[in-house]
Length: 268
Image (cartoon, rainbow, N blue to C red; front, side):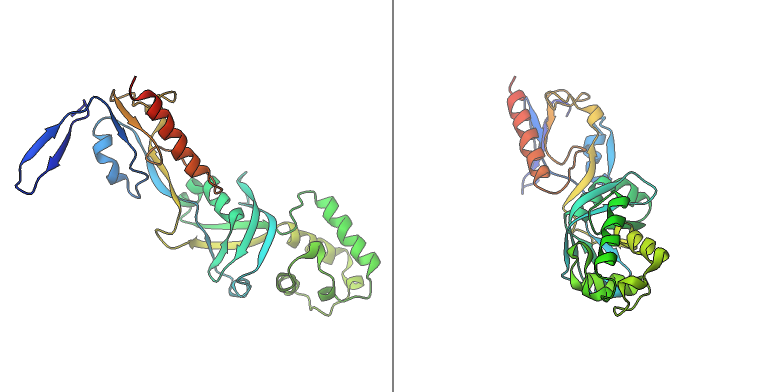
């Protein structure tokens, strides 16, 4: 009932109500909004639960052949939005993983869900957002190594397998000389290094995501005590609330912190 009573079923089919002065719900996140029905029946607004912190499936088979390659750090972003992240990127046999991807999936959880996880992702392999500085670096390589082959000089010390892949993706041969790049070739190279686009075709397998975005709407919660505004003496802590964070221990910290806040106020 609204005072926080709960029912316990016994083997002999006896139903007994137990009343509590205060109740804290710390069940963690739920994958389906139906799992929140008992709380919505009490009057709580529920934000649609969706996955967060997941990997990206990439359709490009040649790219996936680079599995095991790590580039650290990179920038990742979703074209046409302000959604971006940075950190290490790991190429896997299904696509992309690593903090740069997991963080982006957290920032973009709603956007990705709305687009059925079919979007383009941009990778800045050199972790440099100033295009002029990248151009200066490339021109320096050309001036210093005009007769060297593209394959022999790796800009920004990119992994060898990735650099060869990018050369071929641009339509060049590894034997092409740096002096033969020309202005058009240089612009293509800079664009590839700083804004390399890939098609995302879905996310990692269901249940492999780390957390869920969504849950009890924070508009229904006293943010100082974490007590429900619509059901007095009912408190919430952890991922059952509409809170989620990027990778790096922040979701654990959120669980501990909200638990501490509830512990401070539930007895008052």
